[in-house]
Length: 507
View 1: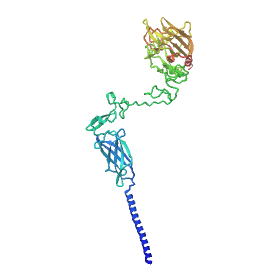
View 2 (view 1 turned 90 degrees about the horizontal axis):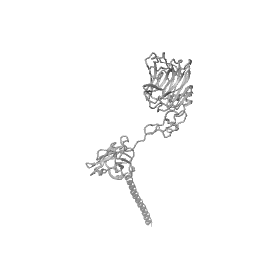
View 3 (view 1 turned 45 degrees about the vertical axis):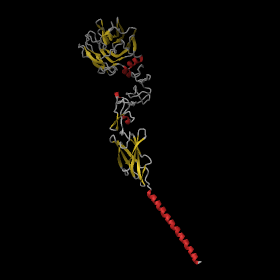
View 4 (view 1 turned 180 degrees about the vertical axis):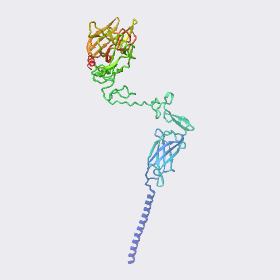
């Protein structure tokens, strides 16, 4: 009995040891299998970041430069997928022998003929990664680019095989390879080739779109201050109420950018009048014309006894010019215009004129007519006559004054307006308004005489001169000159309003 009991215990122990041994064997197998799986696995990333660029080397060769970024992984090479302009894959290139380390750059030279690649325009680059002793491809493209301007193709038989669907290239097949030459600017018959080549503008290729000018319109009134290609130029881009087409109002501003300030409106200041005068001689020690016309003035004389005797004296506004006549010979200095435009000093068909000036006489004239100002001389029956003139006349049995006369020559008889001018040391303002139907004469802003329906200047008269003479009638020795001072001589090409005439006088 004792032997049978001991035998059972031993058997049990042996069974336990047998189970433990089997478990050890299973454990070893499992551990070895797991370790082998671990050893075989590679935790390298499935993609490695790359940067690429392409450069054409010839009609058949192109290099693709690949730069690796920082990061783990065994990069064994790259695969390049080429696509056409429609985005369809047309060929591929693969290199597993030239890998790269982190931050390394490798240039892959690709023979497009060998890989039988037709016209290409884009490419995608995939990494080839060695993982667990196997080569695997990246899950997605790590860089894409354009094959420009290579236009490299191979295997062509004629030009039709080389059509790159670009109107800006000439497509030919040469030695089995396509040559797609870009057009220069202005290429084609008369510069028309159906395209605008890259880098060209409308100035050198008329088929390129016109670049719109940069127009500046700060006040947004539709008018710009840029002159080229932007329409009518705005004279004031700070105010939307001021531009061409605006209504001119009498506010001291050029609202419509035409004809100056407040055209059609009476002036409200003396400076406005001086700016509107088409001819303006202030006589401030010179004969400068400050008016809007280009007519100039100069001093002349008849080489008589009073030649060179003019001077500048104190006037109403700075200085005035003074003429001296010492005898009835009348020869002396006078002012005349140069380059008159034919309409400045007459009104035959040139509209209304207003003439304004100040005078200070030196006593009663000793002769019946001392002309001061004459305009528009004409020749009729071989006699020179002033178209109009303003002068001084003696008055019979009167020793303390004279008559200022405005004479308008209109055949068959002369028309005259006048007012009495007493001898004094005072300045007198004279304003004459002349048009084809009416003449008005003002003394110190007061209308003293007028004449209507006088017929105007005779249009059949042959006018010899259209200039102006100041200080005499015109340079003929037997027409005597003025003895006295003249200041602020102005000519306007419109009839001054009564308020404007008063401005001339009061200022």
